[in-house]
Amino acid sequence: MIGPATTSHPPLTPAHLHPPTHSCKASLTAEHQTDQEAVSLLFSNEPPQQKQKQRERRRRRRQRTWLTFLAALASGAAVVSAAVFLAVGSALHTQSLHAAIPSISIERVQQCSIDNLHEDLSFLERARPIEASEFLDRRDKLAEALAGNGVDAFVLEPGYTFQYYGNISQADWEPWEPEERPFLMLILPQRSPSGQVSAKTAFLAPHFEEGRVRMLGIPSKEAALDIITWEEHWNPYATLLSSHLFRDRPPPTLMADEEIRDYIVRGLELNGFRTVGLSPEAELVRQTKSPAEVELLRAVNTGTVAAVRAMRPCLVPGLTESQVTAILDNTMLSVGFGLFFDIVLFEEHGALPHGGFVTGGKKLTYESMVVIDVGAHYLGYSSDICRSFLIDPPPKKEDVRDGTKTHMFSSPLRQEKEKVWQLVLDAQTAAAHAMKPGNTAAIVDIAARTVIEEEGYGYGFTHRLGHGIGIKAHESPYLNKFNKAAVLSAGMTFTNEPGVYLEGKFGVRHEDIYLVTETGEPELLTGQRAKGLYEP
Image (cartoon, rainbow, N blue to C red; front, top):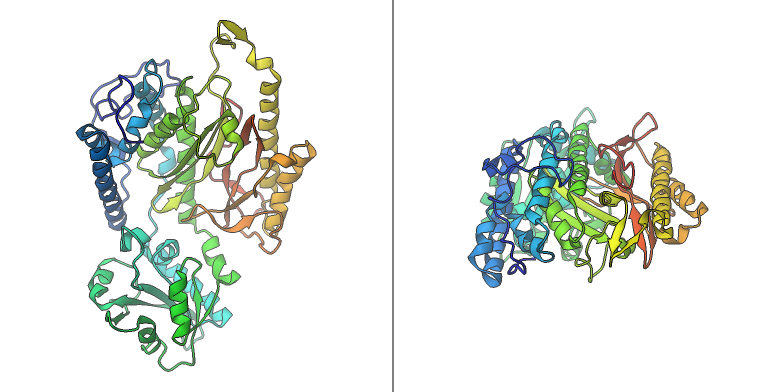
């Protein structure tokens, strides 16, 4: 939250948060050097493809604009100067770091977390941007599915699916909000004399935007993009129907992407097109990840887990949920990850899987069960992981409150936390063993659910087991106990996130990413699973 600091601490600036300077800090008690190494070193993993660089620069410019505006409203130039740090993102959280206890050195906690993460950045080494040729291969695979379904074309607009097939996101096309003028991509199956099916790609765009479309750098087999243009006073859908793509065909059938807006679908139908929804064959193209996609998912998900693990030994009692959120966000920004979502919940707040409107201000104690559900973006791909843990105990394994000693390690609540933590891990293990080609999504969910139900906590497992993950954090197929139609196949990637939530007490969730393999046992894409309450 941006606003005036409520304690004597100054705002975090590049002078307070340095890149890592020496070996990993095991905990906050370790010494932290304060030399003035350039903050630019935090971004040494800049994506090699020019398009990704341009996309990142545009994202940062947009964030800088908002930060400048909000800072002017809140506290003036002090926050604006902080916005320089870590390409803007960390300043968004600067003031929230100082909202609680003056005795806590927030800067020291933050630096400890960054130092620990930068001790080992090997998770980034194998990740590379998707090559142009892969976008073309994806379209050819989709064309084969369309031909098998008897569909004339697949139609989509800027968004996640457009990014998957054309390397253009919604923000690349229109940074502020979706444009009301239709800009559509069409992928048509075409058959060669030999019978081989390949993709023909075309676009529908406003005439005045044609030049901008050509400048986007959309991967293409052809020297120039095939763009059907329409003037502002024309009917764009009638223009498309009468174009060279469909002129000599009977009323064409278009498969509409799940993200396309309803008014566009209705416009197509009212002007002579027949539309159908996604087929399982078309969905399978995106559900099946290539080796390059697997490495990107491995990098961003392993890195996100590593950020949580790096931060945990630095945390101390008195920090609020909002402060821990900001510390983790800044830690991820330090390796070039884009922020996505970050849910930090303490103790009974964690009994709501995604928190609530009143969360954020609860303070951390040695006894607090911490649940962190967090996702980030890297080179267009998403992470989505969850860890549940305790912070390091006091030296004598006892908590002093109001002058009396409470032996928290033998309390019934502590024993239940340990039991539930292990139970959820066992459920996750059972689900992983069920992630085999040929099994249904329902089988995987039921494998985890059975473990929890047999111990009497079935009432506390309140959500599905997981979902597909890729460019979007939530993709099909979805792992729930009634999804018997979805069958797992090699190349699919899933979250595996069982949980138990005890209202008024605490919650526990473990979430990792798995790749379904041909050999039967899935491959873990998050580096390592949780090992204990103090080793998430």
